[in-house]
Length: 95
Image (cartoon, rainbow, N blue to C red):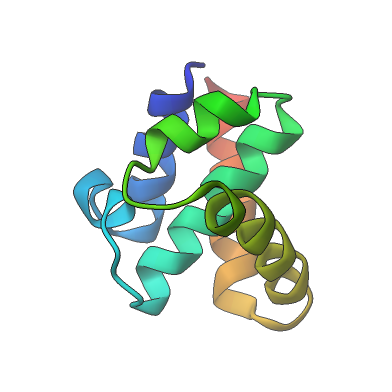
């Protein structure tokens, strides 16, 4: 799957739009979708430059390092976040 297709799939799972994810919103659902997308792409060994290109309104540090750190914290303590991540992984496996 291409990075943009993964982003679309995660957006669908989280109930947000790609425009929401590419924007600067701080709403939890949108942040969760960003964190999940970045982590899935990282695990898929997508180049950092490709990940950054998906989020034009964010800087490199914010999108790469903050998202990865936040993901690691949320996956342990937030049930909704974990469910969305697992659903996204499941859908990836189905494709």
